[in-house]
Amino acid sequence: MNEPVSLVALAAGFLKIALASFGGGLSAWARVVVVEERKWLGDEEFLSALTLCRVLPGPNQVNMAVFVGTQLRGMPGALAALLGLLGVPLLIIVGLGVAYFHYHHVPQLQSVLGGAVAAATGMALSMGFKVGGPLLHDPVALALAVAAFVAVGLLHWSLVAVVVVLGGFGMWWYWPRDAADA
Image (cartoon, rainbow, N blue to C red; front, side, top):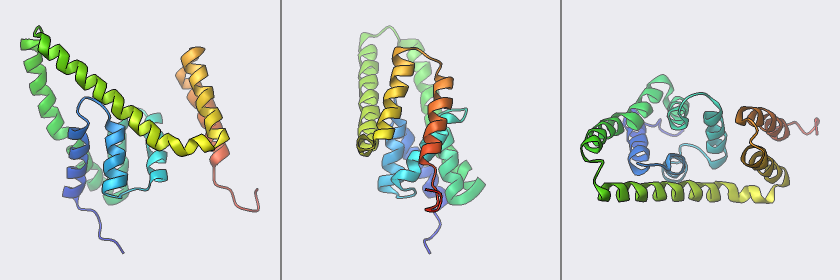
């Protein structure tokens, strides 16, 4: 049996996610740390958790920290993961906020912020390609992705309605079934 993950390791893992993804790309860094480096979850379990975390109310990565922490160590694990994810970054963002309000007129600061946005966009695209690559060979997953894009992006339908309909269909379609049910 594997040794349980320590609370310090959980806090440190989520602190790494928070600091590495400063400015964006949280989901991408969460996958790198949780799946690739620490191997706390497998890729499929991570994607299922990420989907659940995005559907539930609240910030996605806070939900993910609670999910992973609870899976590995119960309530103390959830609290450790939350502290790692939110503690130091909260102090940093408050300090940066104070500095921004004093120096927001400086052009170099605007350039730095633009670079942070570009890096965050790249991280999000990177995770999309890594995670979505295998789904390109699944016609139902591809159809669901295209339908969601068309419904929300082109037809401007309600995101909630699209998630309920397409998410419900996707869960029904991919729900594990016994061989006798098939």
